[in-house]
Image 1: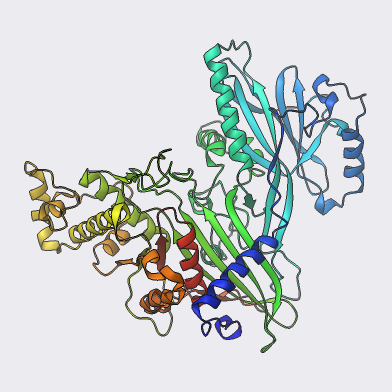
Image 2: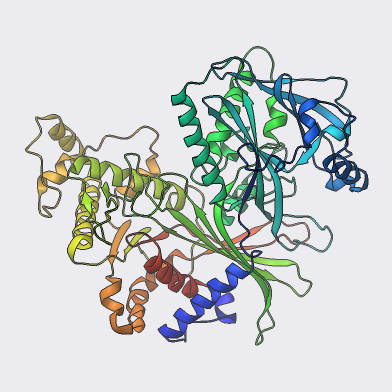
Length: 622
């Protein structure tokens, strides 16, 4: 429907590029001016830059500060449904952080105290009450909890102290104004340091702590973190999951008795996508302690459940939104969103992080989702559509260390063919598990053909270092696919062959080396899925399209990008996109079409060339 409404297919390539640049600028201007994430608390240059009142360190409730006065007014005039559920206070004797959990009416449910209990950095969280627990002047409201990190001198708690709304999707029906999808952005983190008792810091430890704090503050400030607020009416539960997976999970759990009450940490089924769960390392100690406590004989309930309930899974992402768009010809109204989720694995800057690691995770991996919400004449959701693309560094073991002598550092490609094959194989299995392997009934487009399920669109040059890298990738990809396409009756012979003394190690760039194919071990990795292995054994499941971007568009020949689009057009039509009708009356969500394949684009750094080509594909699909 959207393709007929806002069709760009008839424009020239130059006009397409101009439209793409305008679209990106509009998206950037629609998210609030790009206000950077700020930090307060421990490590701030100004002692007053903190959410806690200056008198909180001396535990004297008679001290009145602007913080306490504003806090009292805030609590008095706030509506019950808008009241913060988590409040915190800081004490020095002992050095601890208290969390006050409140219900919808603002009544105190539980107070927890977090502190470091010994010089080794061991920590505990326990229920705690004292005579000042009900003194509202000492408690500060926060939006949620990021988690904590261990430092040489103790523990650094990170609190989400300020957020801003980014998008609220229109309601699904006229009867109930329920929120089914919200997006908020973190604006400020509060850092709270809890010291280890009797800890004596050496000069080495002090220098290491300063280094860690500098890296932590830099990492928190340089990312835009987004999340989905917790609500029982939410269909999209967290920011790490795309719209198709969220609605599919919602439908599959709609009949379960505990579907709406199951928190995200209670079961792997509800856990955020680990690739985009950026505060996972800060939350992992709480999850591990929670799991041990509920599995012990002490009881089936843990005090950590109240704390985890307000721990927010955050995603480093770009979010662009345009709301209430109306087509002049048809009168169709819609909202459109562009969400790019950055992977936390193998994260790093240009030149310092490239290629894949031993687990198959690649640098610069990003999942980009286009979302279109079609509205009816009452500004309610009628149909939702989404389409996914990914980008990421070439999944081989290679690097390009920065060199001050040249603007273009030389590309260094690993020479171990088995390490290259393992990294690529694990990356393929990961892509299949997230974007291709689907045991549920697949609803495909009516004009679906037999295109590859995973398509690598490679935009690097075909000469010099980039050419060497592209040829190496093509060779390793064909070798991996050849191994897994061995017929079942020949599989045992291949296994027995690998048990013999290995032949001389082949050179990675010998494209015709048969020993490279037979040398790759085909044993099943731990945790691999049979469905994914079957897809890997299909020679037509993966395709490599190498399009020399610079050679094709040189001298301003942007019209030649249509050659790439014509090559990928059958696959894009076959892959389709996710389309679902919103609930009407007593009926639930109705899935009309699902996307069960992916186009993965890369250049050297997955930036400029990748942006142009992904914009080209995205406009064609929608």
